[in-house]
Each structure stands twice: as structure tokens, then as C-alpha cells.
Figure 1: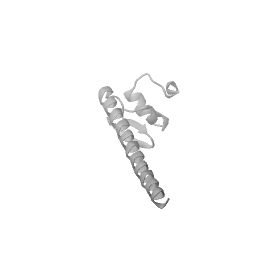
Figure 2 (figure 1 turned 90 degrees about the horizontal axis):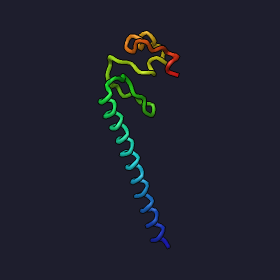
Figure 3 (figure 1 turned 90 degrees about the vertical axis):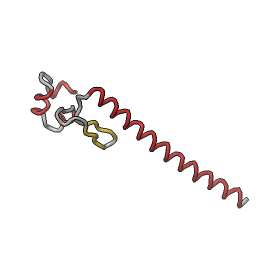
Figure 4 (figure 1 turned 45 degrees about the vertical axis):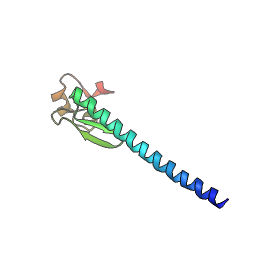
Amino acid sequence: MYEKEGYTSEIRAEMEAGQEESMRQEKNGKEQEIKRLISKVGKIKHVFLEGRTLSVKPELTCWKCTQEGRAEENRRYHPGKLDDEQS
């Protein structure tokens, strides 16, 4: 009985470590995919992913910049687009 319990806790620890590693790899994969897509588009300043900001091209702005009150900056880089068009 004792050996059986030790064996299951050992397997459980390995499974938890495997789950953490797979979650970490999945998150890294998502970030790499976003960076790849941004490099193709090249028209985004920030991408907001799970509370973190990835800076891409500082000369352009994104919808989030407009939401934060930088409307003039957004109009300069995206002429003809108004804040209310983003909703």
C-alpha cells in the first residue's frame, strides 16, 4: 500500500511538471505567432496580450492608444478614422 501511494504521488508530480511545461510552451508559441503576424502587417504599435504589452513600431498607434485618450496621435497616423469608429 505504501509503495503504491508513493508511486502515485511521484506520477502526479511528473504530470504537474509536464502540464506547467506545456502551458509555458503554449504561451511562448502564442507570443511568437503574434510577433510574426505583426512583422507582416507592420502597422501596429502595441499588442496587448494577457496584461503585457509588446512594442512593435513606435511610429504608429493602435486602437488602445485611442481608448487611452491619445486621439490626436491616432488621427495623425490614421487619418479619417475617429475614436467612435473603433467601437
